[in-house]
Image (cartoon, rainbow, N blue to C red; front, side):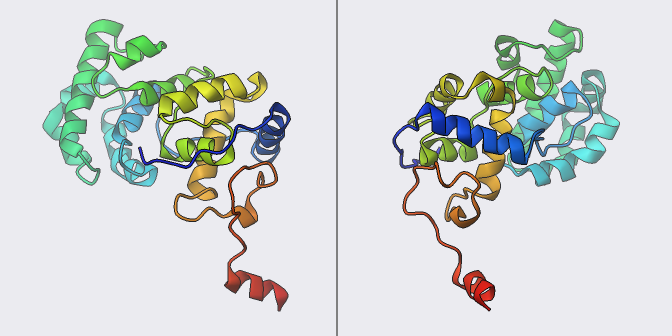
Length: 230
């Protein structure tokens, strides 16, 4: 994960203000991956590594119609899975993992997706981030999945300065007020994806800019500023 300049940690009152703002603007944030059940959510998240959600959704719509369960996915076979996800990066290895994790779900969990991080991480192709996403979205556990967007936002803002994704995750779990923990991961990822962008954060339209430690703030682009003046 790319290095991001760390800011000084924010005081608790600023953290509260940031998440209260997120909650007011978007009370029920949603992930952007499409799925029909816990199994297809798990598969979608596995496929999303180093790929865009939009790209994964385009590839999985037909796949999930044909194979919405582990048994159906195994019946489709690794080659059949590959045929549907060729547009996704690393598709051969991902197809192998999806096939193997489907087999393991049948053999060890009765075809059901387990609800613990330990059991999820024991599945082929499933790491801590993937497990946290599934636990959060499907099982409504207050986990935080740190991707590149959330890692950047945690460090830039001062919400959770840390050198590694795990450090940022652990800092957020300690810092975010409990009432906001369930949705914190979605708020921060979406904020990083659409506002606090990697190359040029759009500070001029950021709802939490007044509490953010990032400096210097990005000003309103000249073209838009001139349009406002006119």
